[in-house]
Image (cartoon, rainbow, N blue to C red):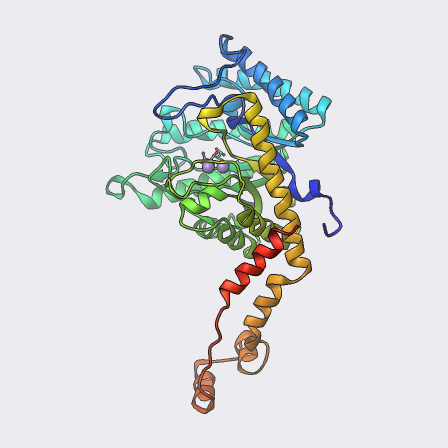
Length: 407
Ligand code: GCO
Ligand code: MN
Ligand code: MN
């Protein structure tokens, strides 16, 4: 496609937290997965998962993986103990990366599970918690550098509020800005040159998350002088949770030069939360790949990370394998269909034609910035009555289906 291989466009990644350290538990029930390492000590369990992770990557022929610190190594009683556990596992991951050629798409730190983060991490009401989160972030950046992570993700799971009645909104947002600036400074200090990504999500687990959606995150980064240091990691199910389509979130990021990477999944519209299903919707995926192909540099250093879980009712290792295959297949088809849409200018011609009045006459005046309210009034006073055209949406959707289901 356009002189690039499918691998260069798609850069698939497996999400560590959904594979071998997920076990099919949900808020109402315990895990349904049975693993050979269930009875081992936490550290030995972590080691067994590293092995299983690389076996899965190999079998799927997926080049990348992604993780949180807490996914790969057990948390200790102190920061020093946690970091020691991390060092052991990171050394192991490094060896595996070397022998298999697999790479780290991104890493991050979990600043939401431990009870200390009940009121947030960088947006907590407690300065000691802020400090703990910062120390954890410091280690996360060092781990990323050690493993050559191509990106580093900030997903603010608890960076939000439950109620404004007891929240200093200004202080919390300022602290989030301070936290991200510290990350930028430290990465520079240690020479960690990963692309930083913010992953927006409107809510869950917090009631209202500060990185609500693409537009909110971009405005935040701009106000805090961070826009050129970050891009966005857009997740399909987070888009729908915010009342947007995946395509809307990708487009908003793209036109602002902020499209960095994708967390691939899909939601169940009947359930109003983040169900993290594997992506199988070909229309949504085609439109997503359309945005990627239109993006300057395509997916770039980003990737298509399957932030998706197999259902609780089918938690066999085999299901992990087949659901990733289904997701990859959908994305590969979406890529082909999107390339065809672009090659045949299916949507581009429709859009160009729809806005043709801005190409000449009064439209060109507006676009060039020469028009004023006075000049436009003068135009209206001598012009013909306005004629509007239909958007022809039904026709367009039918054409889209033709293209998508014929590749
Ligand atoms: C979620 C998020 C996470 C993040 C990941 C990165 O809704 O739980 O999508 O899966 O992608 O935690 O921090
Ligand atoms: Mn995600
Ligand atoms: Mn999610």
